[in-house]
Image (cartoon, rainbow, N blue to C red):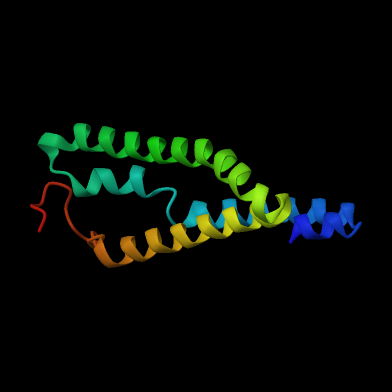
Length: 124
């Protein structure tokens, strides 16, 4: 929406909306998917492989961050040629929202509950 407001001449409002959107995203992400690789790796892996499992988990997290950062400009440039810069940016962000929703559903469905479990207990 901030991109469309900027085109309509509401530069101050579009800037504020963009900053608020970034803050809202950061807050929502911080309370949902962001801590999972760090918190859950200690609970999911047995003691013998916990360090290796945590390392692979964190590497996967940073690799996914790298892919998002590298793909955004390429996807944006590809879509901007046909849809325009503002519509392309909106489409890219909507795509990332959909992927985040799929990831959240996967976590809700597949991540085992560890509340009350001992760290050294066998995992099912």
